[in-house]
Image (cartoon, rainbow, N blue to C red; front, side):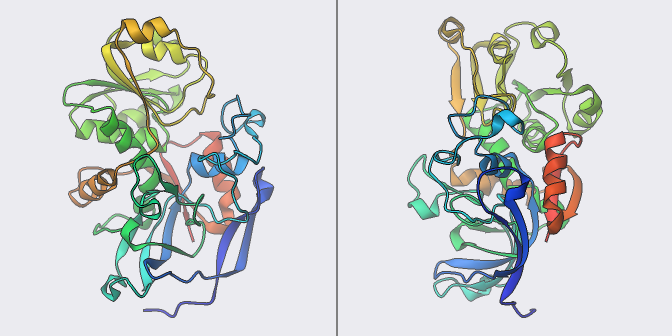
Length: 358
């Protein structure tokens, strides 16, 4: 095992704002694990909306527009996903795949050398209280660095022949997608409509819904329709088209929504009576118009999906090790090129995940 250095390269987020708030440095002290933590050499860190949204303070209630625009710049006081002010500078990075290289005094030393995925939505720090969690890269430092510390209980051993980039694409996007399907109780032969289907979470949701035996109708741009079909979608509706022209009303069992926006009401129109709507994003804008009559006359169930039970991540580990899913990685970048990677992510020109390799 190589010697652990005293200093490392890392990207510091110095405050809420634009790309100028991302500062790449090579003189950051390597963190020391507390008694119940492990030190991880980061082998890959995915790019996610949540890191960008936190930096721009999009989670602030002052923001009314879509993500990644001038209208998405929020205010500091409630700019994090939890609504609490952040103590800058922080190291973001919600996705971590890496190798344990040191452990705290209360952790079994035999864990050294394990390859691990770190759970993004963590309960250990809040004593596993329901609907409470920490987010990696927000309440605690994340993976935009050569090394990071994580609680041993939140670091899951993984045995897989996937590449570093493929494994690094899993924690945030795939746990979000699996949580959406778990919370909305997607069953075999049900019809699931997935918005934002070419992105990291959307492409994960396609695979995970197909794994459950569902029929998947995906919404994606015309230029990405072919890639979305290759991932497993049974039908692709072009994002540029009117949803209610492409689908008859009351033909969908479950909507998995990452987009929201001004056409949100159409998603409820296509749901069957008793249908379920699950949301974990609003990239087209968080403010929507709801006809409450549609909600109660159709007996619909609306589900917000942030908190994740531990079994969601445990399930993902099993799916990977049994070869039941395969991620879509579009491009990798060195850590120093984080601004380029986030700009490419915002441009939406790639289908699947973008990953930093420290």
